[in-house]
Length: 145
Image (cartoon, rainbow, N blue to C red):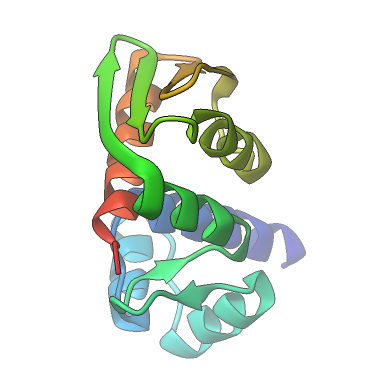
């Protein structure tokens, strides 16, 4: 049973980082799509256990991603991809802070990051994971106040 909960919570982590989920019902539906059947009450307990928070825009974010969300929404001007590389442009002087927030969030399949003055290069393990990182970062960027 503990393994099932851990698997479900890992799936929730991936869904939250990939999609702008606003309700527990949406999360239950996304879990169902990948073959994990559970109730809204179970998801509610998982949300509490995982420390998920809601942004002012109403989307769920992982507590460990709150700092990253702040850095991306405030300082990042664009996010692009070239194969397995994610290129993040930011306001001058802010790239090291953005890179540090990315490193602290421990995103899956991130091999490493390099920061200049206004550019961060994130090296992903694959083209697919880089595409997922771009979507995640763009979702965070879209949550500007």
